[in-house]
Length: 340
View (tube, helix red, strand yellow):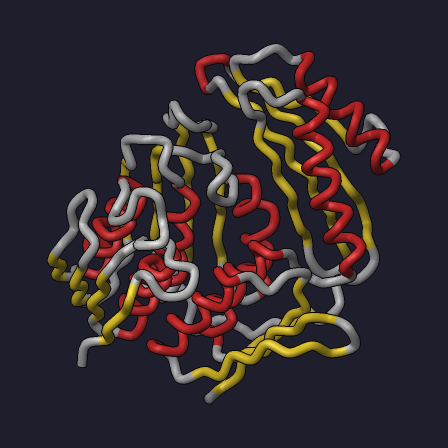
């Protein structure tokens, strides 16, 4: 039976399609989606969404209709997931990380190991950067029993792209549930200012702001000067490592915006998260929800309940027999996933 989805519902973005692709591959349920990304300035499939569809077709030996740039309707009929070596090129600065997060949960249940190489954007303001996948998302995957190795051999910034993300995966029988009600004590707060093809003094000014805001030493703050050919690009990575979880805040340099202002933005966002006492931030809450639903159980406290996460929950409920509850306990926002 076809699952009918409205791409304009809720948050109205590409996550509706990506979650549907992942769960369609895993459950074998075909879906139709209309009004894809209707909530965006440029509706329909962009390059990164089209590559996610094409990759899902290759991995699950699916049949698809409507897979073309700009399409606002799609029919996806999955076959059997297979592992192996896969390479996909977005051909723009479109997000490699969002494509990877569409494919990783499905490939974990392939009958053989898999290797992914995705070329495109690894660092842009509309998606989690490759560092987030490697340092925040991957440790939680591993806690759930997955054996993965995520790497970024070459950074790719917007608008040039040209980056490369690689993923190695071993099959699993199932994912273990995790419960993240308490993030534990803060072990370290680390800041990295990355520059590629732009003056390193920009990173120096950014770190001055962050060192002052969080009393960081030179051991916990650094400049990462990347090859000029990988740019132009600038990103701040603020990583908070707690006893039970790691979170990351990012801020991207913008033409015409002073470097201290970019750093202040990152500092404010990190301070808000630290003040919240939650285990996971806004974006990790959204990404972790899908993994917990696949595991069939899990819970976490979160700093923000976004419309993005609410919409993701609605799509998940269409494919999986799980209950997803958002509640408030002891002044904390809590997400609980359990069997329906």
